[in-house]
Image (cartoon, rainbow, N blue to C red; front, side, top):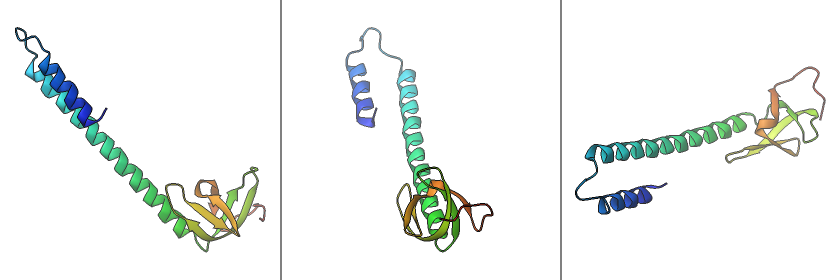
Length: 117
């Protein structure tokens, strides 16, 4: 429910209330306060997502030139050097010519026992 819908409902509620038994003003204040809290939580959630996206992009960029171990599409552990990255909410690393989602990276640096890719 967005702000316009909330205000329309509030106006309709006021318009169609029983004049001999008007609604409690405290109830309207409470509903308005609750709606404001929901709006602020949604804004905070969106801001948190932006911070998370920026952190992922920064992490991906920081891996350029580093040796990483990752899990490929078949579930096999592979290693290689990160040569580039694409940015967005889900960054992708270019590892020895292969595009790998950042979340598939399992280790950074030389890792013993990792299969060479």
